[in-house]
Image 1 (cartoon, rainbow, N blue to C red):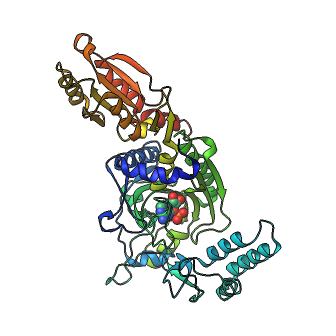
Image 2 (image 1 turned 30 degrees about the vertical axis):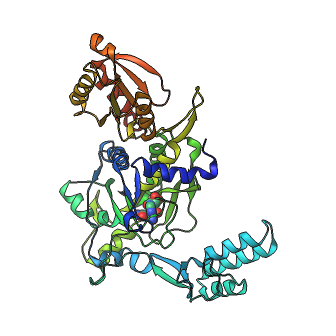
Image 3 (image 1 turned 90 degrees about the horizontal axis):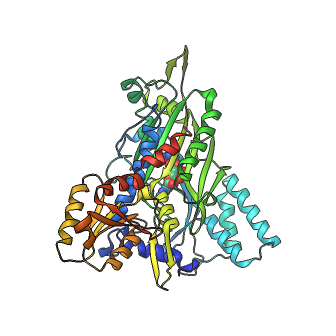
Length: 479
Ligand code: GAP
C-alpha cells in the first residue's frame, strides 16, 4: 500500500504511465514547470470544463461565456496594473546564477536553525515582516548577510541586490506585448461589447476558460504551479451597493460547486486574505488539502470598479452604465478557478490502492463518475464463438452517445485492472450467455459488484450513472 511520504511520487508516475500528464518536451530533457495532458488527461480536463461551463452559463441565465484572445493591446496591462504591480521580490546568487525569494530563504533558514518557540526566531521573523511591509529591501538583504545564509546549491553568500521582477512573459521584438497573466482582462475589455450585443442589464456575468501565462520563478509541485496554465474565470458586474451581497453569494455557490464533487468536505477551507492582490478590495481563497497541505485552489475577489475605471481612463472609452436612472461604473465580483489545480485535487483524492480479499492489491482512480475520462468499457470474455463480434457491435451501436473503450487485448482480470487505473466507472462484458439471452454483465468500479443486465439497458445505465445532469441538478437547487 502507498505510504504517505511516497504518495506524491506515486501520483506523478501514475499520471504519466496511464496517459494523464506527461512532462512537456520530455525527449529534449523537459522544460521547467510546463506539462502536457495525455489521452485521458485531456478527457478529464474537458469534463471538468464542461461541469464548470454549464454550472456558470447554463444554470445562471444572466451569465454568458466568451473566448477572448491571449494577446491583447499593451495598454490593457498598464490599465490593469500588471505592468507596474504584478511583481515578485527576488534575489540572485552570482555564483550559482540561481534565483530565490529572499523571504523564503530567511524563513527556511530560521525553521532549520531555531526551535519552534525560540526568541531569536520570533525576532527575525518580526523584523522580516516589518521590512516587507515597509518595502525595506536593504534591511532584508542585511538579515540574509547577518545570518550568513548560503545558496543551497553552491554554498556561497555572493548575493545580488534584492529586486522586483515582473511575472508577465514579454514577447520579444514586440514593444510591450505580453502573454496574458489572467483571462479576466479579456472580459473587462469586452464588457461593453457583451452588454450591448446581448442587451444585458446589471447584475450579469461573463465567463471564460483559457490559458494564462506567468513567469513563476518558483514553479514546483507538479501541475500546482506552472508557467502555462488554464483558468476558469467569471466576472460578475453589480451595483456598488450590492458588493457584499454578491461577494457572499459567490463564496457560497463556488464552495457548493466543489462540494458536489464529493472529494470530502474536510478537504476544503476558506481563507480570508489579509494581503490583497493589487486589484482587489476583498478576497477569499477556497483552499484544498493537496498531498502537500492546504493550498489555494480558487480565489473569490471583490475588484470593485478597479478594472473598468482604469480601462475608461486608459482607453478614453466610456465603460459605465446608465440604468435605473443612475450613471455609474459597476463593481465586480470575480471567481477564479485554476483548471490544473482542480484537476490535481481530483486526481490526488481519487487515487487509491486497495487490498482485495484474495490478498492482491488494486490501483483504482475513484474519479467522480460524471468526470471520468472514459464512461464505460466493453469487453468480450473470450476471443471465440463470435463473442468479440457481438461486443464490437454493442460498442459501435452506442459509441455515438458516450465516450467508450473497446478492448480485447488481455484477460478479463487485467482488462478490469486497467480500467480501474484510469477511473472507468462501468465495464460491460459479453460472454457465452449473451448469445442466448442478450444479456451482459456490468461491473461497477468502486464496489467491483457485478450484475446481469439486458443489452438494451447499457446506454441508459451509462447515462444515469455518469451523466453530468445529476450533479447539475443538485447544484441548481442552490442557485
Ligand atoms: N484573475 C484573478 C487571478 O488570476 P489568482 O489568485 O492570481 O487570481 C486565480 O489566480 C487562480 O488561478 C488560482 O486560485 C489558481 O487556482 C490558478 N493559478 C494561479 N497561478 C497559477 C499557476 N502558476 N499555475 C497553476 N494555476 C495557477
